[in-house]
Structure formats: C-alpha cells, structure tokens
Image (tube, rainbow, N blue to C red; front, side):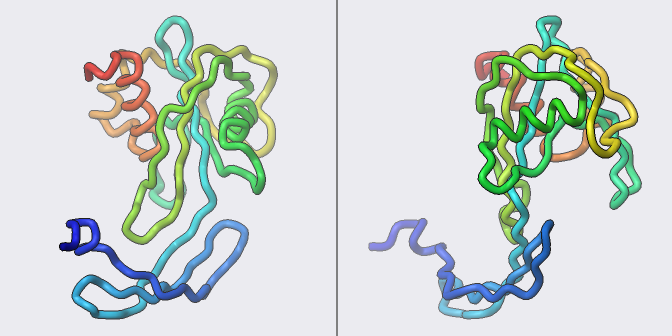
Length: 186
C-alpha cells in the first residue's frame, strides 16, 4: 500500500531552460501529477541567500532601513545577500553583514534554512544568528540602506504589526531568533 507521501508525489520527467542570466534561471518542468496528468510547470531558480540576525549584549538587533523598488516600499531588514559560487553560506552571511553595515559579527551559528516560495521558486535562504559585533569600518560597495541601527528586540513585534518589517528573510530570522532566545517557549 502506498504511503500518503507516495500518493501525492509529483514526478519530474525533465526540465527545459527558457531564460538564464546572472540573477535568475527560468525553466519549464515536465511534470506528472498523481492522477497521471502530465504538463509543463514554470520553475524559477535563484541563487541561495545568506541572512544574519546580529544581536548585541543589550538585546538589540542590527537592522537596515531599505527601499525596495519593486514594491516602492520602505522597511527594516536584516543584512544578507546572495551566496557566491563555491562560497560557504556562513562566510557569505558574515561578508554581507560587514559589507552592508560596517560591523564584523561574532559567535555565529546556524539558525534556520527555508524556501520562501516552495511551489514554483527554488531560492534557499540560510539564516544565521550572531551574538555580538564590532564596528570595523564603513559600508562597502553600493549603498544598501539609508539607516543602519541597533533596535531593541522588544520593539520588533510592534514594528512587524505596523508593517515596518515585512520581508520574509527578516520576519523568519527574527521569529527564529526569538524562539532560540526563549528556549522554544514562544
């Protein structure tokens, strides 16, 4: 007898790449669903991303006030970015923190790995927790944020409720960090 997993599993017969550049790959996947129907389904492939929740000994989190052009919307975000080919995810997270904020994170550990839109998009996000950081210089590269601030963790729920924190990586990272600090007690 088939398990529930086996009864609902889609079969992939292949994928045809229809668009490819440095940032995104779009494919048509030949799939067969459990009832035997077979069709092409779009699949978006993005490089993996590394994100860091950097918290200091005063229970403040390092956040950046950023504008996102696609939505013409501002919000507070955690530092992070794409993992370069061959780069270790933790190394990428540390690099992004330093490039985007000028801080060098300390005592880093894996927090959570997730897929933000699992139905059609492959874009693994790996979130790390850093306890402590020291300012080592100015931000480098393109301007990433208008403000970089240490925000008390106690203010985060209100910021989320107001919509000042709205991106998936930041939400998941902050919720996971809160769980880690509370020992899974919510």
